[in-house]
Image (cartoon, rainbow, N blue to C red; front, side, top):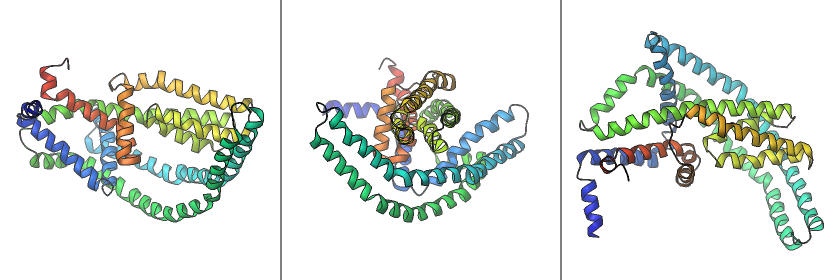
Length: 353
């Protein structure tokens, strides 16, 4: 007990550490209790942070900030319109078609499972197979009710989406336009002695900016490669599956493994147990190999120095706390935690720790 008290007194005797701890605690409390309500604001801050990097790049070429802001925001708005009026309807249509075919897909898997005891009697027992089939039957029977409830709840989702479509671009514009005014306002309410917090942000800023920009291009490239591959091989729901494969790179290692199942599921239902299914799996694996061994080293250049174990633990931990958004922000939060550890006074005094 004395050792713990001594460690706490030694670590938190520095006012800078206390200030940093209070800032982190305030952010954590805000996200825990108001994160869901402030999600449009959080999303707008992230988008504005990404776009501001492009604006700063244009400013280095001598373009005035307001002109650069107008160019970048106009492009962003055009992309939003393209997503709303082209991509979203395509994804919605394919998702609806896929959900309608899920019961038939489950029956196909049921037939496949029924044949296992006959083909491999020493491996699969009829009792185990019957248990699996009962579970499939229960899921199939309740699928219509689930679809109805999902349709009713989607009305709320559509209203939320409309709010996002209106609010997010507006918030992004004002965050970019009044950036200095907002930062000065925030600095006024922050403690003046915040050297440690500033040092943490400087370390996190470089890695976070690299992560956001790198992930943006990684999503586009993996999405495009998967879409072209699936279309070339004639796979149904190509846009939907390619979009999900592209978004899966937000969760390294785990996302690629999880997306193998829907791709294989759709391919098996369409082609059956033959060479076409094998080629789909091989092509998907090749895309993941290119992503991990070519795209990631080129786009991130080892700036994000997180061990794979740290990434997986962050995904599991933050995903368990905040669900989807915890998974989405797992790596940025891990980068922030790494920045805090590196800037912590004890770490600076003894880097070998």
